[in-house]
Image 1 (spheres, one colour):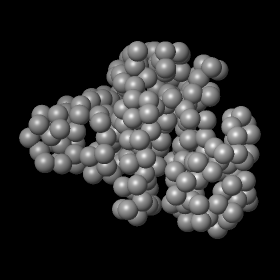
Image 2: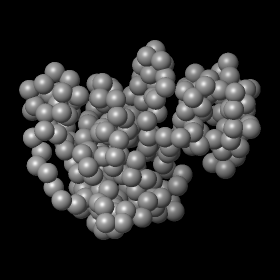
Image 3: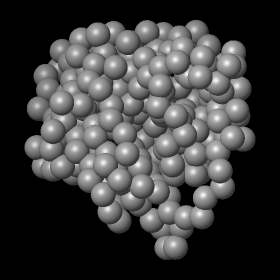
Length: 239
């Protein structure tokens, strides 16, 4: 059973198709990159998977249940693109609050702080953190309940290369332990850190392949070049 299965999924805003007849599967225990330029439908797909997006048609199953089912709440960790923590609380106070909601112990708070490398800032208020540190606080919250599926919207934006590499190592450690990660990005070079890639273009599936398979199929040397090759070859479609 895949972690996510979309079958002819449709999401519309007014007359515009944000996701147009999208079908795909995401296998369990993988780091899957969701790539595409702004406006391609990445965030909309993620919102649909976590159950907070109204869909216009099709089917979407997550961990074997309909997306949005109540029993999925404790099984999915969701990190939004904008930091989703309280700016007037410290990192530790945020984690204590969300940890109480998730029913996790204090030992777990220390574990996730270490995982996202925020130990030196744990007692600082979020308002005083950098943008990257705020994002990592949100990531720590998403990790608290040890979710089976992690949905991460642009988790490495604003981070320096060393920290980005550290987080990608963490993502693969989580996948090796059995979690499934769906990681969105508009930075194509992050494709190298993924087990599989989903490329979206204007709400439609442009490619679903391994990084090596994508490069081989397009005869290119980078994910960015592969996307451009696929984009230029794709026919124009009317929503």
